[in-house]
Length: 40
Image 1 (cartoon, one colour):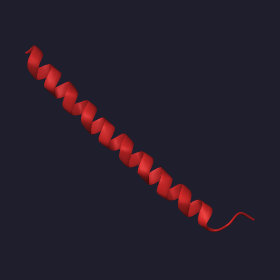
Image 2 (spheres, one colour):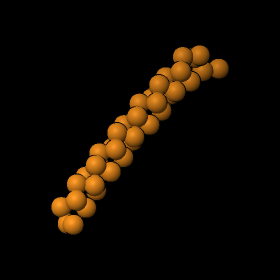
Image 3 (cartoon, one colour):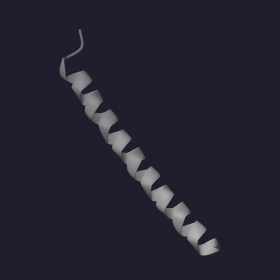
């Protein structure tokens, strides 16, 4: 059986990846908004 801490580690890793993806989405949205504002 794998150690009990492995799933916890994966959960923390998933959370970190999800947060990173979220912040990248926010940044991309901000850049898109700025670009749209410049072209109008």
